[in-house]
Image (cartoon, rainbow, N blue to C red; front, side, top):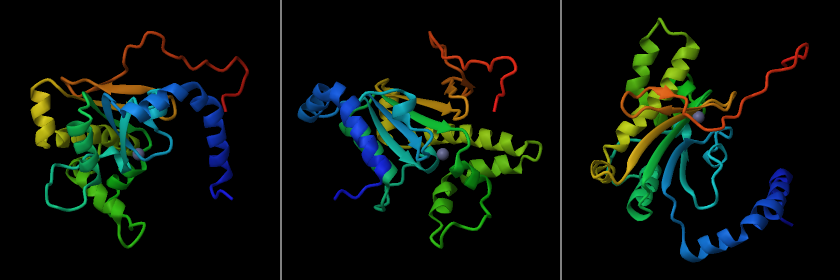
Length: 229
Ligand SMILES: [Zn+2]
């Protein structure tokens, strides 16, 4: 008997009956000729911010690296285990992606941990504390700003972390060389879970702005007298 939670088995049944049934030829082609995604997305593990859903992508369209708080560590060829760097290496050198998107999101638990570095670790290994220490130089500056509110600090560090990861991407020689040749471009975006808004980083200024899209979905306002709960 298959041993998976019922919700996953039911979801898989729906996937086969709907998604796979409509995309059978595409999956077969992808199996035969291999994947050729044009974009690497570096996203958070958070279950509410899945890039395939947010960007409504087809199978084979984006290569996705997910880790706590969508961080890219700096280039450190020290012979240790570097999962993020391995995924980047494959995407850039083998798949030859043309775009790398660092996708942050609101209410990020990893960023919350980075803003409270003195909290007790979740386990003796303190893997989250160690991982989030990548962002420590930026987090320290945000924590020290006593004129900001907690929520301002949180959103600010979520967006700073995106710029920080892009800065670290450029420490990898392959990315640096290809970007200077115009063969790869780096992008930042931030997703607001509660509203569905996507904010895209301006390459020149680093500011985050709402993109111009032709037919934006507008959340309907509640009818008069109707509870907004
Ligand atoms: Zn997150």
